[in-house]
Length: 134
Image 1: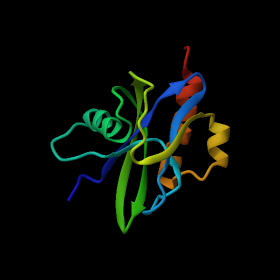
Image 2: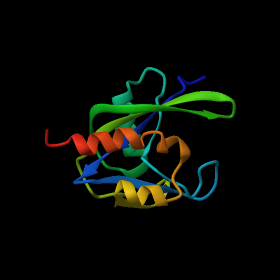
Image 3: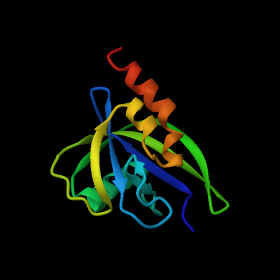
Image 4: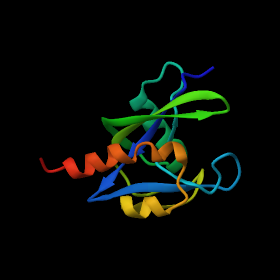
């Protein structure tokens, strides 16, 4: 049984955030999300972000600071989704688990078919964007 903790990568470019659309199929097929995934046993949250980006996009990333977390229920189990800032060390994306990616503003995200669990991070992301340049 896993930890019930998942991580979401929040890469910012100006006021826009990196999002990706999951391949069709499965519970969240076709939905947009902040890329990331489950933290595996013996792995730190930062290590999980680096591993997930390698698996999903074949790009190296540098994990940054914690932004905020939300909870969601999946199949009767409560999970925690923790958002972390990341720095993309390459833009040479190879999509393995997604059909497309883009940089989106918070307003655009509000209109997209976005994973409900990832929506829990939007207030923290908004505060992160507005707090930049302090």
